[in-house]
Image (cartoon, rainbow, N blue to C red; front, side, top):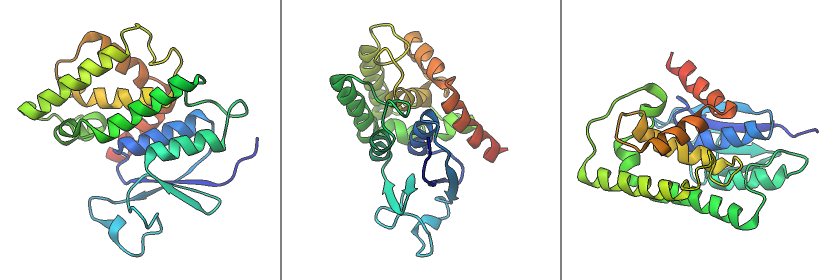
Length: 214
């Protein structure tokens, strides 16, 4: 199977949960990718000379055949359509309703739970940083995450839909913001996140952040 040249722009530390989602999607499909980084902390992405996507000035940015796309869930869906099963590995469920639910979960994780993202930034996940106790707002957001994830995983399967999909990686990362900080999380969710975190594609991304930190 031939493939075009693919470039993925990431934050310089590989701490972005959204870059991780796209990186995992590419790895699961077995697609080779050229990684480029931009230093968000210094505002490099806001400078006119940045070669990345001009519309949103955020990462990730995917470049294929002169086509540039940002926003991770849009990129994930584009990759599924562009490199479609059965020739390429599937990253969304085959069943139509399950596929819609996976996309719903991805959208929810990106649009809700802001206090968790603020109080448990991904340096907890990728650099082992410990944060202080959650605020009342953060605790309420964590409880919402726990209740929703527990409901989604009440079937006892190690994956959301009986087969792995990209939403599993996204949900596991959100849970690990709490788990890896030492916050109280039910064992069912700890086990789920731990299982997802050992997936080879996820570990490849974790290794990138560890290498950069080292």
